[in-house]
Length: 288
Image (cartoon, one colour):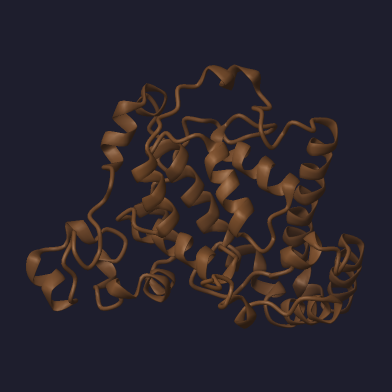
């Protein structure tokens, strides 16, 4: 009360039958283009098997056999199949980490990160959870999560990086939020993935690498389809400004029915300023 999961039914069909249906649809419709399509946020090009795997409604072995069989029958699926099985392997890697380091969900895998100075900013954290950061691709991901219990994997990395490196908020707060809201909230995957983004985990992305939400949006949602779906107040904005509406002129914003600070928030932090206030980011130029 209210039932925040009311939108889940349109996305998920729980149970073994739903898992097998999702696997079949993925192989038939998405596997061939998966290697590249998996990163395109505006396209439905991923398997949606993660909740089914998490709840044991289908096993990784079943999935692997189905993929390998499909590739044998249709060699053009090889590239997509190899990439998908590699991603499935990361799931096992995360499980192995959790088995050997049971404190993974609450403690830095790399102990040198224990001295990291995080910021306590409840207002910024609340804006992030509600998809009101002023960065459209971050907000789209966070709103998709709340509405469906799922977030596109590329959007997860962007949103996590924004919380950690733009807002300097402890990765554990983001991990907790995902644990509460994701339909596929797997303990090992969630913890390992957050620590990967933070730079504190095993085989992690270096801390100084920051996902630029504008660049990422332009690269992986080039026509703004993902943003327009989940941030409808920006739906009429031109493609050139959909990922950075604050750069649009007053006439362009007015034509699209957008008033920054009213119908859609201005950025809660400036990207360049966020880099500059953290010397670990400011010294590196690898905006991704």
